[in-house]
Image 1: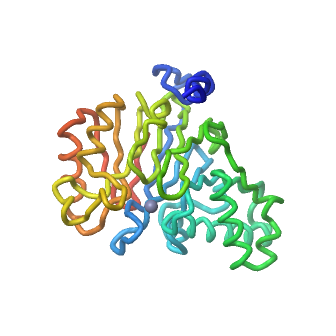
Image 2: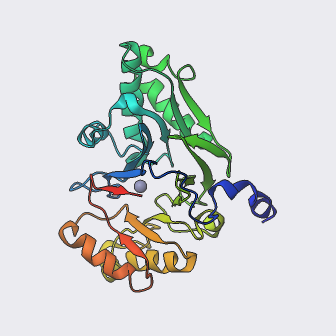
Image 3: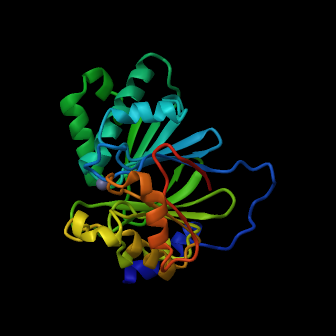
Length: 295
Ligand SMILES: [Zn+2]
């Protein structure tokens, strides 16, 4: 508790200080592209991962479960040469293995003289150690030699600030009971605050980062109405109804739901939105894979 209180002033750069800080109308809107929206076991969409683009700078958050990340980035029009910041939330297979592929392709582009600058990968130390270990076990030396040279692994402490895609952000431990996991909050250029809660239900320790956010990115494994079918609570996940209740309690403006089941995709947007709206009066977004949102 003392740490949380003590960190309050430090998180001010990521805590709501009101709107209206946009300095000139020529400011570029920040774009979020959902490369995947599914949970770990999906086959009809890709695992949850996304990019946040600020002008020419791109932050990739997680990589999904594998090589599919490369096709998703290509379809989204994101050149690997433009990706210089990656945030890895945790080591689960549906998040980390795509990052291995991104690291590999960036290193190969470096070798070919087609990538300038450095690749920065942020996360907690355990996650980055796992990433490095997988890379060293599975990728050739000419790729791995870039690690700690021009591919930098930044192990962040709980509550530590970092810069990504030209925006200030802060990582925080979501208090997972499974694998250690970080979420993050980020200050957008126009003064809005985005908070990503990772892929597990909300924990009180995230309150200081999430409360009053303009954008809350939150998992919803399935509908509450479908809880007997998909058993979200056994898997330590929550539902669209839970997410709506959470968003209302945290007084956020916009709620984005991801990391869902893939058996109801044709009706997902409408049904999840309706359930979240039972408690939450703000805007609810249930994006499809490859959907782009202007933040
Ligand atoms: Zn996951």
